[in-house]
Image 1 (cartoon, rainbow, N blue to C red):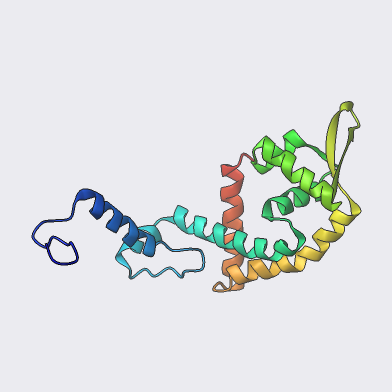
Image 2 (image 1 turned 180 degrees about the vertical axis):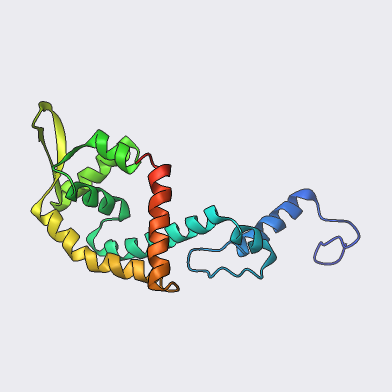
Length: 184
């Protein structure tokens, strides 16, 4: 053992090796802003995994859009509820949960937030006054109109490397995947 307490004659204990390995992996864990470097050996398998690439794209998309929405106090999940409501005459919270794939308790919280902003409100359901439907308000519609341009900028930033034909193809393929994968 030298003056630093390192034993150069024996391999490190398994705990130390595990910690060192975890630290090494942590230093190489990419975030959504890190470009994919397919030359890195640890990245080759992930780069070959379409699911992982879709995850990274979704993560980056969410980060970009959430940073835009941050000023309003809303997040992408709120935006999804508003967009859904924009195409309906109102929806039960249970329907929002089922159609958007969010946990029912999350929907309650999201609708609460949207009501506080004045973007949505709960009203008695026309066919059953004991039930409440969530409807988009005029302020919610105005908010969506204001976010249309930002949404387009986020999308254009994400698909910048693609030409227009490739963008159309990507969109059509994603629609097809989403349609079969989400029960539409």
